[in-house]
Image (cartoon, rainbow, N blue to C red):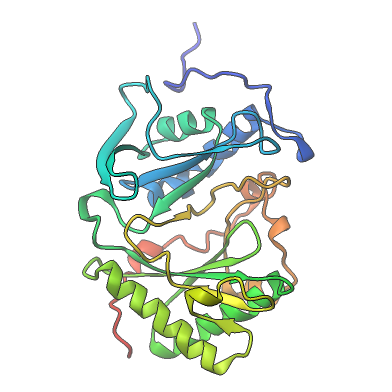
Length: 287
């Protein structure tokens, strides 16, 4: 008798979730199994927000904070009050491979995580720069601005990390010690963006300028209670099945494109640019 290797009861494994690249649900689940060792340290103890596409990414999906009815008893949840929904929400916690596979079986194509963990929800462990180009600016413009962010952070004495958003932009993170409020991390990111705006004609750093054509917004607003970012190595609901992939800073000086980082290519990457990120928590003090 064969031994079952997971607690998950799979369904509709032949369903095509990414029609353009013909990726089935089985292949999607396989990706998350391969990515799990790199993903789970980031997901641990964070209440997750999902975007599910049970009919495939070419059909309408839905945003899911609440755990669905009838979840297995081994799936951990945490009940938190949502001020926006004005009610308690039962968030899923993904601390193990079985839960990650279960999320994949739900066709949770996108997994978004907050910047703090459940035990210390008001204490973020990242300061997050969302570098977002507005057309006609492109990913190449986002690369240039992300490098400006790094240069500024280097000058201030901070070690930073970068990943593709999986779409048109880039995410820059500074791991921080858990002694700051969201107000403090948000003010820090906003302050860096304001300095860059004075030094570069393409950068904007105020929320009112978010959609200004031909600008790159250094978004500080995600550094807020309840806001999220797509998790590292998480898939995006794009036709090409792109991934929000951690990369080396040196990669931004090459001719890379977001479309290079996909469900097929990312598992083959040998380097782990963010391997020691949690060992580099920093104080938000300019050196």
